[in-house]
Amino acid sequence: MGATPDPHAPGDDPSRRDFIHIAAGAAAVGAVGALAWPLVDQMNPAGDTLALASIEFDLGKVEPGQQVVVKWRGKPLFVRNRTPEQIAAAVKDDHAQLRDPATDESRHKPGKAEWLILIGTCTHLGCVPTVGGGDYGGWFCPCHGSHYDTSGRIRKGPAPKNLVVPDYVFLSDTKIKVG
Amino acid sequence: MSGHSTYEPKTGIERWLDTRLPIVRFAYDTALSFPTPKNLNYWWTFGGILALMLGIQLVTGIVLAMHYVPHVDYAFASVERIMRDVNYGWLIRYMHANGASMFFLAVYLHIIRNLYYGSYKAPREVLWILGCLIYLAMMATAFIGYVLPWGQMSFHGAVVITNLFGALPIIGGPITTWLWGGFAVDNPTLNRFFSLHYLLPFVIAGLVVLHIWALHVPGNNNPTGVNVKSEKDTVPFHPYYTVKDGFAIAVFLLLYASFVFYNPNVLGHADNYIPANPLVTPAHIVPEWYFLPFYAILRAVPDKLGGVLLMFGAIATLFILPWLDTSKVRSMRYRPQAKLYFWIFVLAALVLGYCGGQLPDDPVIAQPSGLLLLDADINSFVWLSRVATLYYFAYFWIILPVLGLTEKPLPVPESISEPVLSHPATTPAGATASPEKRG
Image (cartoon, rainbow over the protein chains, first blue to last red):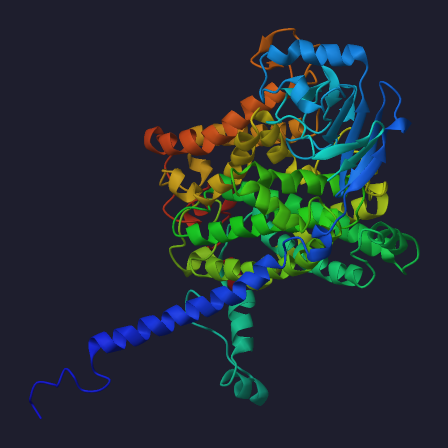
């Protein structure tokens, strides 16, 4: 003994050992990650939740000036039959200072200005606004005081966005399909 | 543990066990002989009260879980069944619901004690941070637990709180969907909340063990804030503080029992006895009283993300408090200026709590002033909330850091025993400094 250790002796090569350590560590991290992901992802919507069907709604039941609330994907859906005055009020404010600018025309189907279809959850923290309330005659959210106008646009209060218009189509003059 | 063990196994079985698992020695050193400053006042009894409340919540909760059904169609009815049909179900549920309030009352007094006597300062920073984590876990547990009865307040409270995460840019939407397990608060949400509500108290229990461990390394702080200098400054935990804590617990239980038996619903909301309806939000939605100060901070900001960040910031600030307070003097007994700001802070916290329960645009006194400042009348709860919020943050981020450098503290006693012994009225002839050796 006393000689310089052979750097190429099996199991003694530092670069070889580093490689084994790093490879083993990486494999362990990868395995833990691969096992963790199912545990995280199981909380996302399940297949049956995702498979929620679209709904059809008969508008004939809604009188002018009235709002009907339907449940869609667990959330309330506002179906409002607007009066000419309410439409005029909304159009008049198209160029007012809006937090989330949108014209009234962009929020209903062409030629169907009386029908406003909205997801009925406040864009602040998800409460259900009450119809006809607030400073603009649209909706008022009781939770934190957001005011929406008759086009469902945010006008005052903490909410950042207009009430959301969902994807929907007119199947006939009096029937819509949402989703 | 500080100091060496004084435990002496007396029987053969104890000696046999002590060499294999010294659990009796551990219990003796931790709970009986532990040297404790002899000047602790009643503000130091809330630790014991909190441990008891955690125990009560665990036992009543495990029992309630034997009867509760975590499903949107049955949850409300199963809670009503507990109230009407299950033997003593009404008592167990009222103990659990009011127990949560009592738990928070005790933890707030415990925190206030810390702030006043500077218990969070070196070398107790880790102890303090563990306490903050316990508080955070308590808030999560209480919020989730309030959702389980699936009443109107349960449901819409869950909607509002989970939507807070939606304020985060980009990841906000996916995170809320992930939390809900769907596109709205629904059955998957209720199911996972039940699972987590069962889990979190045991997480709290684990944190409590660490909290007590971290307490027993430096030992207790005390009303003078002066370090223990010798054994003369201490008494063994038992019987001195077991008796003192026991008395405080008895008084606290009187208050608890007065709620459970005489006014069990006064701290709740009538709306929560209406089954959850996703299509109608109650006109006046407020959280439980112990969340009101943070709710007021959330509503004080006219911006969604800003409000959420400030609300979480109010809690995050607590975690770094040991490094914000620059004063070397722990106890506010010897900090005349800090003491003043401290009591204003307590007032601001109470004002925030009051504002959180009111409608933001309502006037604070009499009629609205008609003077509009930015978006609201200056005589409104939203402006009062803003002033109090400003003070809340200023206290931690400006006042405490600056005051530590500018304030001239009063002379601090040499030791815990000194102020007592030098006071003529409390030193009758023949009295000596070692009460633990007498009687």
